[in-house]
Image (cartoon, rainbow, N blue to C red; front, side):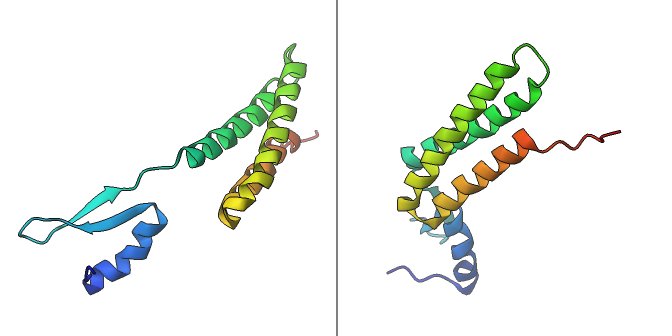
Length: 120
């Protein structure tokens, strides 16, 4: 078992949250090295679909009033369905994954629906 100093013990949860771990280096000066953990392809796919959803909602908003409005709306509708299904499927990977997808759905809805222009 590796013994950590008090400073390392305080920093360990911080680095664990970001997917990093502290590992003892084999060098004689007893310095700490950061080794990045491998990122799961599933996590990358979840992130890519969420980015696709935000971009699709933004495209729907930007194409408003142009000849491409219908295409933007269909893209947003498809993205909402995909992210919605992903939200349900992500719950099996923990509440954090489900919450991230739910936040993405909320942001997509806000981007597509809310109009901050004045009604003057």
